[in-house]
Image (spheres, rainbow, N blue to C red):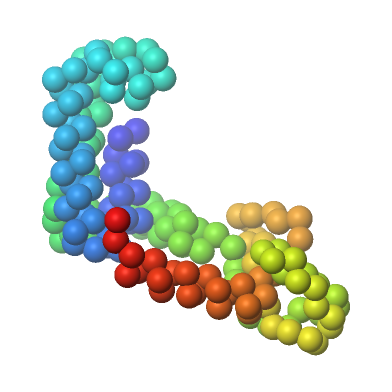
Length: 170
């Protein structure tokens, strides 16, 4: 069961993380390993297994999984070799899973047909009056009750906020 998480990490996280984030995650994993091995019957162990103190073997399995994951974060080439070693059917599964994480709903930019309103600010538009960014269903993945529209004013405002936030430091 822990190898599944390792494969998911190798496919969906390591290749797309900045080096600093990979280093942070590796250090966090190693801290979890240390804490779990030192206090496997303490709060961390119980929290991991929903209040049931883990056995030493369960703690060892978690620690091993976290330690291996830290190695993948430290060495992207190792993560690549791990991905290449998996059977193709599993590789296809994890590539599809990453694609679903990355883009769970299709996005379109178009002029919606008919009368529509922005799901963010509530502004209403008549047919052909304005462009929208529209989020729709993804077949076999999601089932939205209706398309979600965002007006270009809301997109512009979100972009300005994001730009401002890039320069903000606590």
